[in-house]
Amino acid sequence: MESPIITLTTDWGYRDFFAGMVKGKLYSQIANLRVVDITHGVSQFNIPCAAFVVRHACLGFPKDTIHIIDIDSQETSTTAFVIVEYKEQYYICTDNGLPYAVFGNDFTKVVTFHCDPADNCTFAAYDRFCGIAIQLANGRRPEDLGTRKDGLVPASTYTYISSNNTLKVYVAYIDAYGNAYLGITYDEFRNIQRERPFRLITNGPTITSLSNTYGTADKTDLRAKEALTVSATGLLEISLYHASAERLMGLHVNEYVTFNFAG
Image 1 (cartoon, rainbow, N blue to C red):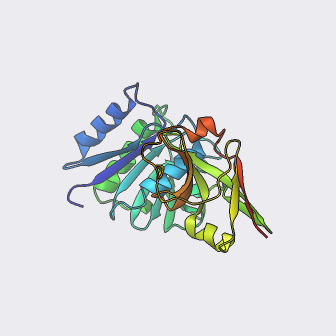
Image 2 (image 1 turned 180 degrees about the vertical axis):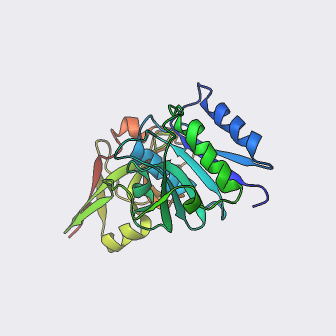
Image 3 (image 1 turned 60 degrees about the horizontal axis):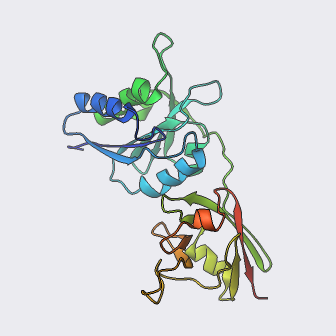
């Protein structure tokens, strides 16, 4: 790639200087580099939310894109640093359940690499991930940079449970607007619904229909209005018009809402 792309997905926040350190190191070593900040706003050490972001924001980048993902990145006896190759892109992260939550066993290869015992390694993205990204951008292959391994550390993933006339769906992610993304796609939902009427039970209002917009039918009515929609990710989403569904409907990641279908 004439102009390499490196993305950053982290829990660093926007107060500190960490992103600047990493970008400075990358720009000083890679010609014509483009760095894309996916987000630095993942809540600290929140692996499920980070996996959601990577799955929906990173996989669509072009061939040879390099992704640095720094969430709870500590090398231990059970959590190695890894390069995951998937559809000709490279994901540099920690094997702490996050890559499994994104890829499962659907990857081309996984390569482990380590910190040099003689070097400091308190900031994995800066001390180690940058060096790996620089070598990949300069044409090195993952297998030249570490040791192949067969799989990833498993992680529990929450999606949905269907039985008879009830569907329990877990909240996978909540965005800055307080919209809740559910762990089920529109197509999966329709296959289970089978055109039956439904009632979506939350800690707030009950929802009985699927909408194609956040807004209300009457644009002069600016009161908070609950809606079940299909998000740009393809997942179902619960929202409130001009309000936070998270706060007003008591929604939380990894907790479930219930759909009841007419028999």
